[in-house]
Image 1: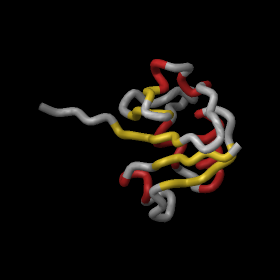
Image 2: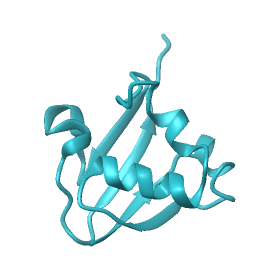
Image 3: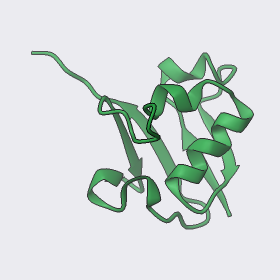
Image 4: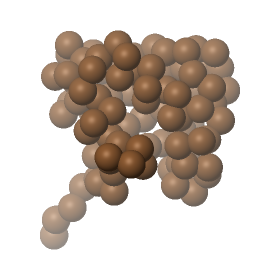
Length: 91
């Protein structure tokens, strides 16, 4: 099924400037892997060495944080948007 992965400006450099990448994926993990296939280097910035989501990256599906859903195994519906969002820190 086709979904859209939205990339923050920090990752657009790796994706040739693309803000959104359409991919075929059934889960969030599959979507990230599909973007990695098209634009190598994305997954290493989003996933750690164990394949888990890096703690400074937030992922949203339909405005819901995947950490409160099924994480990287969150099932996607056709046409949904997966947003990769860097965490903001500071004071």
